[in-house]
Amino acid sequence: MPRIARAKAESGFYHVIAKGSGGQNLFECDEDYLAFLSYLSKNCEKLSVLVRAYCLMTNHVHLLLEDHDDRLSEVMKATITSYALRFNSRAGHIGHVFQQRFKSQPIEDEGYLLQAVRYIHNNPAKAGVCPASEYRWSSFHEYASGVSAVADTSLILDMCGGVDGFLDFSAVAEDGGYRFAQRSRISEAQAREVAGQVLGKIAPTDVKTLGRESRDALLFDLKDAGLSARQISRLTGIGQNTIARAR
Image (tube, rainbow, N blue to C red; front, top):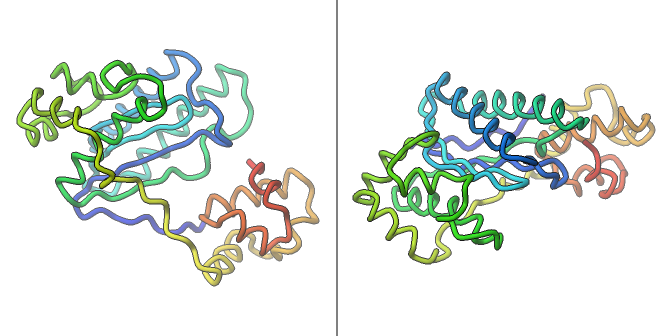
């Protein structure tokens, strides 16, 4: 499957986001959260990737990963695949659990790195769930207690001058200097090229003539390759609502 290349971090640090397909919940019970963290930990250890911070929200996941050997995609694919299989089997669900590709953003600056950790931990507060210090499913409590379970907290704690410094930094309101940038827009020329690679011998305008299952599978592949719903609609003549529902 052709894909738009991910931006590579010279520093090795990435802010990663994975969302539930169609906004669906990824976690329905404590065992789900624990299972995801278990898969993530095992895959990161196996592929020499470090988890520096994490926050598991109901329908999406924030991770700060350190990857110097270009194994990020392998870690995420293995984790997402294993978790999705378990989730569907346990809950009796069918279909995609996660939304297309996960998103990643390189972090090259030390100050930005600290802001990313705070940003990730503050997700529950932003969502109106509870303060970061009260949220169970993030690495905040690992930093605050000084006891690392999933996240390797050593680097960030050293940068903050220890646990007290970390807590002081976390308590400062975000200044808006950090945000997760959306993936760069694919040009119309690139969209036509990618669509040709995805569809092969099938003309974009012929996708709408296919049966629903085949049509939706190709629409999902086009989204997964990085095309927007608007671009797919222009190429295929299929409405954006139909494209958004394809999974």
